Image (cartoon, one colour):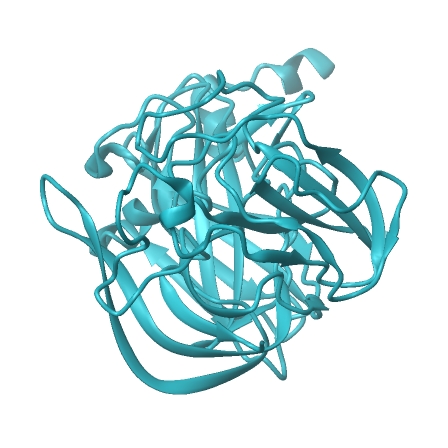
Length: 371
């Protein structure tokens, strides 16, 4: 009898057993807030563990706690799925991104608008694949949603352009690195803050001099009470320029001179590209919200004076997971972008201030922090 039960044809087995596909969320999302409303930004890693190529056709995201209501879907038919997908390496054309070969993985970048006052408590996912001539639907991967992002005060004062800020397609958002044996996106919600004048220029006079940049030398402030857990203060500054670096870029020098601040609750505030010799704190120091930590500079992997700021669940820029945060208050006063070819420049447009409470600036927004 046992032998007879085991004599199942390969065709029958393939019809009964779903394909061996892993889809998981490495970092459960936290509700983030912007001037455009609340959203969830997270990733779904999809790995085809079979030898047969699979084509992803549709992804549906459900509110797991409210009767299975679909709150977001992506489809290959309208290209929304292709735009959300990427491969670890190498880069491939958008038209081919839905095809996941045997043993390969795809990263899906999700950005889902939600009700700020009533967000989902958990999410569930359904994936539809094409396998040969058949359609396969797989459902699972329930993840919790954290409702409250950490609330902090701004790390700088005045008006700033939030370059490379939160967006589903920004360079920070899609920088996936495997360090310490695990994959993480430390800069998921990181922002590079520059100052620009009314013409969109970030400097005056000779562009090769750091002191001619409007951002240079601004005070960097503790965003909350905390403890200094890491610093670096021995890296010389760069001459501004796309390919000018004062030192070779390594894991030790990529952030330049920097400060890492433990602000409690598993959250760390990280400040990169600080002026050498400007740090006013040491490891182990307890600091108060608003205290000056250092001065803005141009060290490490930086093309011009700016501050790279992020909140993460660990004290490192790259191997921790980036998490969203909310400034207690700021105003969105415009938008900036990169224009011009072959010589790019910055162009900003302004509008009436839009106040944001407990929110985060989005990519390339022009924002005003309290002085």
